Amino acid sequence: MIFSRLLGLFSNDLAIDLGTANTLVYAKGKGIVCNEPSVVVMRMDTKKVVAVGAEAKRMLGKTPANIMTIRPMKDGVIADFNAAGEMLKYFIKKAHNRKSFVSPRVIIGVPSAITLVEQRAVKEAAEGSGAREVYLIEETMAAAVGVGLPIDEPYGNMIVDIGGGTTDVAVISMDGIVYSKAVKVGGDTMDEKIVAYVKEKYSFLIGDRTSEQIKIEIGSAFKVGDDRIYNANGRDLISGIPKSVMIKEDEIRETLAEPISIIVTAIKTALENTPPELASDIVDNGIVLAGGGALLRGIDALIRQETRLPVVVTDNPLTAVVMGVGKMLEDLALLKRVAVG
Image (tube, rainbow, N blue to C red; front, side, top):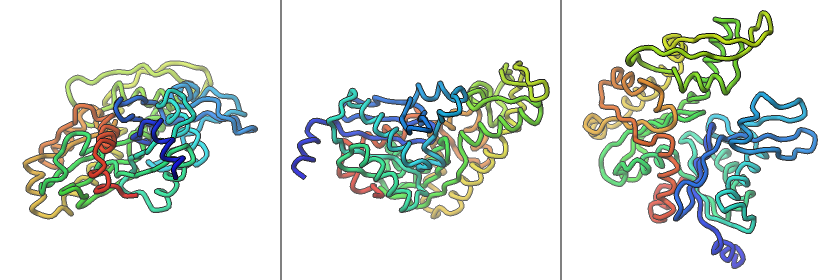
């Protein structure tokens, strides 16, 4: 115990948004020190880690058979325990300038629908990576804190966190989640839909990185202005020869309609299950969108049309969760009130 406390003196406490697509790390007193893809590249024979984060993502689809690219997180929770542990070790060391003699307190943002077994897996992975204390915070609560919503007041605030693996919807009041709804639909689902559409429509195969780029460049949920065009590179499935295909925004909008409708339905379900007094607050305060999916063109306009409520995309949706968890490093009283594990 004494040794653990001594280790803590030499380390900065960390807040981590352990996302399906990206992992962000906030160091106490420093701010965000790491923002990299949640990807690990590992040799299959020796289980030795070849690369983690941004370097690993550059290797997606380019590795030989004896080297595997792993995404340790699926639907916001750990899918590969060993790879997740290695990834956490990498990010913790990077946050401490690659020093190995560190033992930080770590707070991690997790999906609201996480099970007790999944909570334990996240904690064990963090403890195995060198953390001396681990706290878990629901991502919607963290996002609400990160964007500055008055979570301790007796007012209803609705936040929608559209991540890579899941979309979490929550109504928050007085430091607690009154109602939450999570669906396993997010940015990754949209990428998969784009790959499937291009394959079926054009007999053309594109990789995960290309589908993500198509989503970023011309993806939309609602028609806003003129439609855009993207020149995608890939392989013709008939001839087997690499080539390019011009893809239009309206095609992608139609392709993404199904996953986006699931997100909209989750929001409507949350509204239907919100107590009347808090629902009236949401009519005044509106719905706040966070997470990478909030950057999809026109998604705020679509939700506004479907719910007839004000909808706001927070200024920095990608960092809302980690900034909220980071604020809890400075306010341990708040942390103890809202921690789930």
